[in-house]
Amino acid sequence: MGFEKEKFDQLVNKSDIKWYREMIRNSPFSRKINQEKENELIDKSMKQAEAFKSLLIETYGIKDQPMSYMISLDVPLDYVKEEASYGVQYLGYYSLKSKKITINFSAINLILKNIRRFKLDQVNQEKLKDTILMHELFHHLEEMYPESYTKQKHLDTKIFGLFNSKVTLSLVGEIAAVHFSKIMTDLPHSPLLYNEIYKLK
Ligand SMILES: [Zn+2]
Image (cartoon, rainbow, N blue to C red; front, side, top):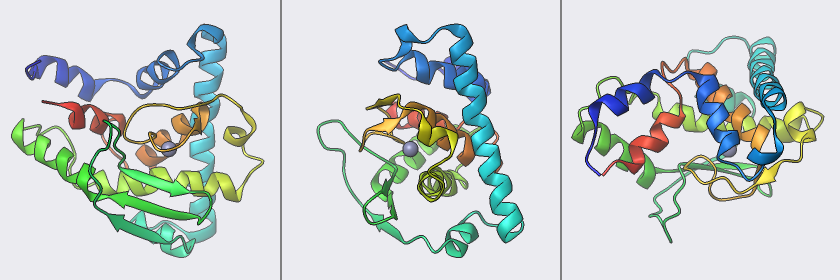
């Protein structure tokens, strides 16, 4: 499959809701979720992301760098270089056990390489790392506030993609984490676009 510029431009401009609908439709639950339920899951997940953003701003003030919130919350961070194994790769990972965030530079570098190789000028390179950090920080916040909406749902599954491959996660938690990473970094496109760039050949 060669690179198709037009198709890629469509991805750049795809709305958040469309991306989240696809997350649900590509999940094992797709048959059980009707349109009305789908709208509700997406709406509540997005609201959860917004609520966590407001909470951080209320508690710690507005920060220039998303990383500053991680320092305020005292979340440990690890940088690793790990190649894909058995076709599975991840950008970041939050360990429930150690309450630590891990960032994988192998996956980040491959995405940056593809951005240059295919001249994807519409894609933001500078915010890639912060987007991953904020995605994983969302999972940390979910643990801090177990009463939150995304923790109550039990649509647990293994979702394949760079943001989610390592552990079994809640589908609504994933939608919310993706959305949180977008609004925390003011990313001009969906964070899920990075998944697609990773796959370009
Ligand atoms: Zn996640």
